[in-house]
Length: 407
Image (tube, rainbow, N blue to C red):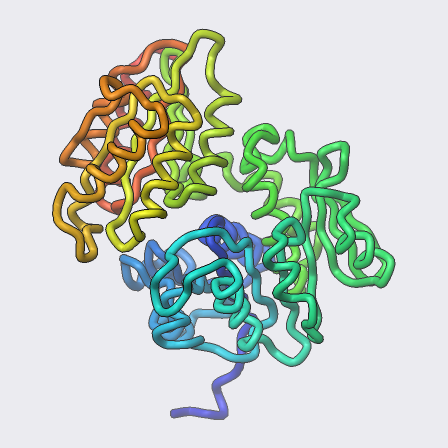
């Protein structure tokens, strides 16, 4: 090995129950805007600049190693999933920043993780990968994270949707790095006694006019992460102003189509909290007499209670139609049909009419059938989980949008 020619590059680690992928992509875009050849790894693969090194789920140490071994890499952003940390640990040390987006009920019963406190402890392992002066970025709106990090001695940067949150007030008073959404909807960042405006949420594409509050949190998290890597606030603000305007910026995450009065949302929402947040966006977009049409499924490695909780979150939004999907590639130890049966029973117990629930054996076909039923004013919500299905559904929606007359 030519050891004299090797050196560190700025690295960011990102974990959390929801928002990891969006935060990674946004932070990577900020690194690119800063001028770095940027590597990123996550659930879609490993990429350096525009070159895909490997496709698939690489949100673990193997993906990080593959990205760092590429001689082009000048900065790196790594999605760091809970499973990879528990099975194999962290791939890197000396990261400039580590982000935990949130801790929400998911994956309980795996690897000894049975409650939110244990899950928070796993997520905060990320801090062990930081350099001595690295910054841990945490969600100040998450009470579990606040409690878990109460005794932390290292540098911590908090973000919040509440300008009056105690962590924001304390950070601003003490000169620590914090980011928040002000009461007027403007995103701000403060550090070392200086404050910057990052943009109004109504003007930022990723916020969808301010209704996608979870993406506002993701933007605040990525902004603090970028600041911790040495990226100028002006560059951060410039990226926030444009990221998400094109569907290709954030594939599979809150993608939107508007066709003949119908709104279609495609996302990865895979747990009750994520689905509830997505359905809140859908409700704000629904026409006065419009209906909600929902695609619903779950991987087999969730326990029965988690699967029922997902169904209750779906039923709470009162969809007119629910297309239950089988996920053959995500059975993960369960028999075919077992998860849809659990969802169906839980939906009925939550008050969903049996006639409104339809089972489909193919995820992409289910999404297409649901969209074809929509009429003006309806919102079609498509949580799509398989990569192949996602590509097929996106291509189909793009083609359908082109074939319909412009509004």
